[in-house]
Image (cartoon, rainbow over all chains, first blue to last red; front, side, top):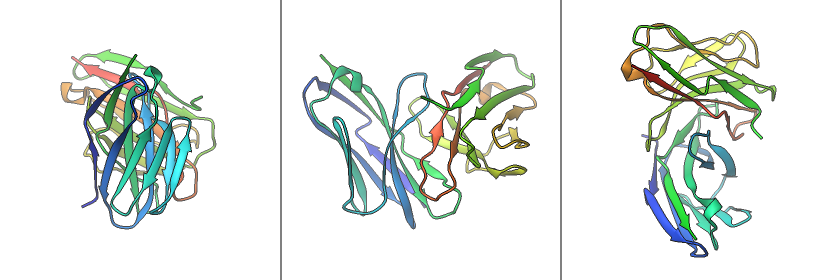
Length: 111
Length: 113
C-alpha cells in the first residue's frame, strides 16, 4: 500500500538553528515527490518536485533531497517567517496526478 | 499568487441543509481535485476530474458530489449536510503532464451544527 510518513510531527527551532525534516515513503512506481508549505488558514503552497534518487532542489533557505526511500527538507539558518506546516506528497503511477500526502511537520521558529 | 479561488472561505450551516462549495481556476488546467483535510491530518482525495464531463471518486469515501461542466469550474455539493461533514475542503488543479504539481486554493472551512 502506498504510504507517506513525515517526522517529526512538530519541530521548534531557534532562529538560525538549522535542521532537517524527513519524509519516508513506500510507493509503487514513483512519478514524483512534492514538498508544500501550508500556513494556517491557507491552502498548501508548492515548493519543490523531485523525480529521481540523488536529485536536489534549493530555494532560499530550503533544500530538498531525495533517495529511493525518503526525502529530506533541510532548513538552513531559519527565520520566524519560515514557521509553517511542511507537507510531503508522492505521486504514484496512475496517470491522473493523484498525490498521497503525509500528515506534515509543524515547524515553529522562534526569534 | 493563487489562481484558484474557493468560496466561501468559511461556512456554518445547520444539519440537513444543501450546500455547494465553489472552486474556479484561471490557469486552463484540465485536471482538478477536491481534498478534505482535518486538523493535523493528511489531505485525503475525495473527487477528481480529468476534464469537462469527467469526474471520479477519490480514495476517501464521501457523500458529496461534483460536476465539471466548464474547464474552469469544479463545484462540490452536499445534498444534506451532517456534523460529520465538518472539515476543511481544498480544491486544486494541475497541468496535463505527469508529475505536474498541484496548485491549491485557500480552502473552505465547513462547520455543520
